Length: 361
Image (cartoon, rainbow, N blue to C red; front, side, top):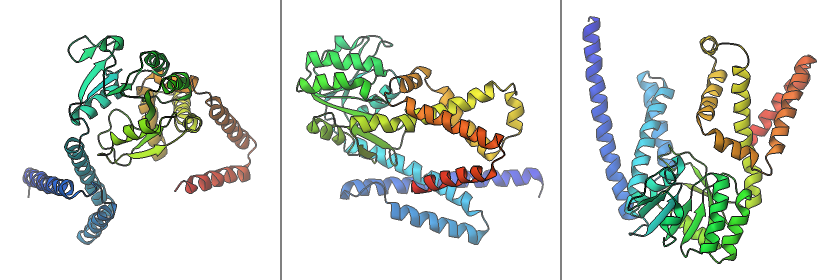
């Protein structure tokens, strides 16, 4: 067969693949509807494992690389779960016409919460300085009033601190929560709302605004003294597969100093060292390696995010300097080991790190 004929045959097979995927997704939709009707969980890890193992075995028997087959089926499973989760959120929505005000709703995470609660049947209002006033939008949150079933504060941390304090004076009757990456800078406002007998709690979504599927994602709930408010906030996410974590305010910021602060700093140091090296980026790209490419992907995501938010996470966390000191000390230790040609210490450093990382699982 000539190249043209082979390509036409390939195109025909591609069309057939798409048709089969469409048919598979249709069956998945029916399975999702059945799970809703009988009250079964959206995700079945045992079934997923069985499907992946079966696909890998089939791939081996047909001469296909099993990792490729697993990657394809994993993408399809994830797509199916995303659709099923969205359907469940809509079907089991807690809205019933209740009203929500998202202060900072034009921002990236604010918009995520607007879309999420819209899908649940809430009547959603936005207050954001970057938006024009209309029937569901306000450029100043004070103009919106406080007569809402839920008020979400999704603004920068220092702005949120002021808003929470002002809300404590207005004493809204509905549920109130922030979604800040840090909690100790908000402590005064959160405590003022608690002392005013408001329904206040605090959330930290450990996922970004591009997230569609909440399965495997974490949502932290920081109880600030009103257990009923925390439980009401959890109920808003009952129809999702998000993993709910309870944490106190001090533990939250201490751990976040490493989870966010250290990881952000490491990547900022990485791309700062590269940009200051004098080596042209295109030249380095030609010499890519598995480790370098993986680190570049993470660093590109960090560099593309909000510098103001990242600075807040570094600056406002009262536990933030400790991880930065640890990063500097570790870099100095590594430099000294290399300068002293100390292979034994280098190996010990690697082994210690591997042991720590292995303990995570």
